[in-house]
Length: 298
Image 1: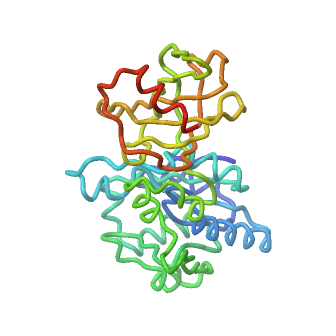
Image 2: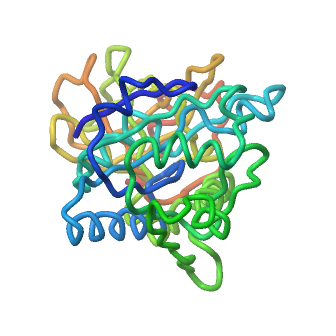
């Protein structure tokens, strides 16, 4: 997969090297089951038409620019993870458009001309609620007309779980109340964050305690104690996890693993959140009392 980073105004050198493609449009935070419907439809159209399979996404989130006075948004899938997911799904060309105030002011028609027709897109696939252009005035209903017959448009209708639309917002709402056990039915997998072990581990009986620095920009579940899986060097371990501190953009996790005696210092890890277990423990607890009290729930 080739990744092309674009800053408005789009460079002629970018458009000049393009070959005809099918484009899936969206922010795709989480790359959830609804997003996968969009991506699979675009992939199928590209295969049927013998065109390149492309995706256009944006960074940072538009709300970080439009609502610049608010706290920067945290993501279900930071951009590097999103790129990884796209690669796994067979995307051949990824366009990452830097969302700036200048780009936000682009008229819907100009977006179509410069970023769809200009990239030689012959078929656009997006969700029913996709908006584009200044103040989001462009919709899937207007997209075909503004293309002047230069490309086809496929609209993907919502996928629902028990009458609720599968969406990034729905997943965020579940994280905000700790209901991580329901997330696989929206995401297709348990919610995952990545990070790095930053302190020497503490060993207690058959337990190892890791202090993990979470990669930047991840949205974390509401504070509490959770059953988790932790993957280290391709090996998965059961454990429990508690968010113990935050400092600016940095978040740290205390993770207790059972039957894990390997050296984990400076290791990259993946943490999958399985189930909320207990309310947040007091941060000033004695760690050995905590271990003795909580190790039994693994």
